[in-house]
Length: 157
Image 1 (spheres, rainbow, N blue to C red):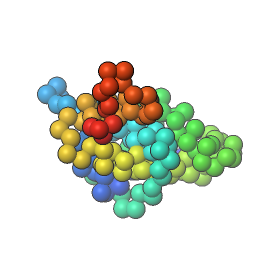
Image 2 (image 1 turned 90 degrees about the vertical axis):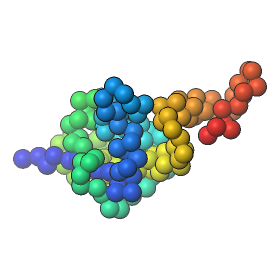
Image 3 (image 1 turned 90 degrees about the horizontal axis):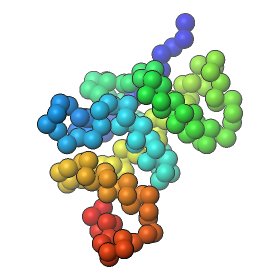
Image 4 (image 1 turned 135 degrees about the horizontal axis):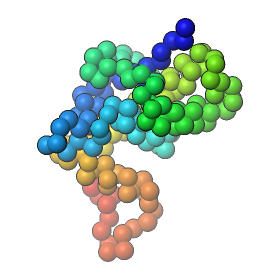
């Protein structure tokens, strides 16, 4: 029987992750699921080359997210890409090797944790996380391109 791998959240990032989760209609939180938050954080961690071990993981809220949820949301390619880039070893992509799967999950967790560290700094003091994340994404997409109107988004980040 195959072991069901889960992606964990570091205890010191639990409050941030909960605050990024949209709950109901009357919220400005940007993400509908914990899997979306962790995938975004992992992509940000990879972009900025920040990988950070989990340390102490939280066991409740947010509970560790089953790998199947990431796969059903289409994030399996991101998990595989981060694994292959990190190890430079194609064997890590083996679908039948549970050790390789555990390693892929661990790499993804570390990038997600690194991305959450970045977000903790970027979102400190922000009221509307969605708006602030849009500014962050705009800057990430065009780090050297000044706004033609002379408006520099970087001063808000």
